Image (cartoon, rainbow, N blue to C red):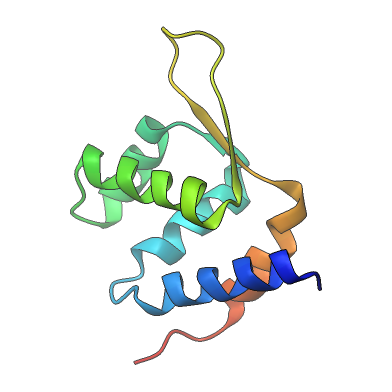
Length: 104
C-alpha cells in the first residue's frame, strides 16, 4: 500500500474510532451502497435512525471529502446541489476499515 493510502487509512480508522454512536460508520456504508448522493439524500437516510441536523450531515460529508479525501464532489451548475461519490480507489479501503470492530 502506498504511503498516501496508508495515511488515509490511518485517518479513516481514527475518524471511525471517535464514532461513539455509529453515525460515521453508517455514513460510509451509505456511500458504499448507493454510490452517489447529495447532502439532502444522506440527511434523509440518517435522520431516520439518528437525531441529526442538515448542517451536521453537511459537516460530516465535508470532513470526509476534504480531510480524508475519499469522496469526489461534482456540481452540474451553481443551481444544482453537489453530488458526492466514493472514489473507486478507496472502496476496498473503506470496506476494510468498516469491518474492524468499533472500540467499546
